[in-house]
Length: 373
Image (cartoon, rainbow, N blue to C red):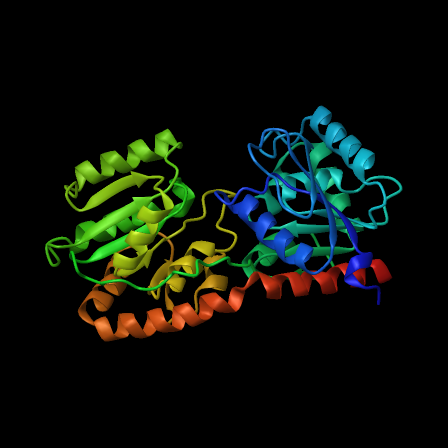
């Protein structure tokens, strides 16, 4: 087997910014691979703001990953940039799904694809060109990797592939992620993530309405990007209709120090994703981040949260759109602090098992195996 220093990889990804899922995934994996001697040239979107990383060549030249997938100009441009910059690369890796359409270029040694969530299946609903390009990229890949068993199952509903490997997301956990004074200011529920319908905040708000009379000190803080104005306005209307204005707050994005304070003060972390059409939660990194602070977590069945939560050990998995069951689990944790502490302790241990070093080692196995095929 070739050594790690023999690996010369060309990556295609959106960015390397730690403020979003795709970017933080790429950065965490890249840093671990660079530390192992792997040579990386990384093509990122021209629309990214800051994607520098020590030890790798980063070139902003690709179209936005959120551009319409069926535009021939975007497909041709990304394929052209891939061919232009592949140089001595012995393997191409599409880190996010939209760029898989440009990973299969003439003359390349081969390519690997990583599939995260919604975009693992949404290309099959696009136009003929996208469906064809995505299908061919999957069929000719040296290895297809999914970040969760759930994403793998959804992919295989769309296409029959002989070998799809699961390598769970890595987690870069803060070294100062220690629990704080729980319940010091009342009972605090915390949800963190982009404020859009797929995250299921409306389910938890309804659960809060069911609990507010029983637990007057209850508070629910929602932290995340609020640029989805339609959904945010629907939440504000729901909060008004259910008369929970004093219990629920939409915080928007917060500075890191403030978010850490909320993690330390929270009693339970609740994020109850719902599948909306083709969109679904591909993994559930937020549950691991909460677990690092020894928080018990509540998530949803039928999505990638199943890969991040051990039901009954680190928290609970609830059927989607079931506010009564969410409320029941929250109630049990409020009434039994010893149970909450036990789940949180196990959650902290579980979170640290998702270190990026382990993910990088799994990918090194993938890369070396791909080069030998």
